[in-house]
Length: 126
Image (tube, rainbow, N blue to C red; front, side, top):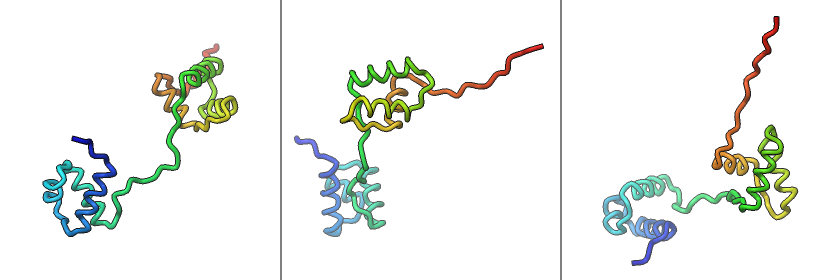
């Protein structure tokens, strides 16, 4: 049996909805889609929305192992660099790469690099 994609689910439910089948349990019996998913679809359709997924402006870019290696060396060389600065350096060195500072932050967090704000502790003097 072939796997039904999410887009096909949307088309099936929208077609049945347009043909007058508006009951969630009936839609579930006809399509075998999870009841919770059907209820979400019905809620969207009642509000007049379509079932088409939202378009995203851009998908975050994956860093290859070579680029990740370069990024890790940048972090080790300058531990106080911001993610925006690291992203700019990556974009300058790799012209076909368009990476944002959020992508750099996510990549660093995935590999257990955590950003912290150091507390100012005054020196004890007499």
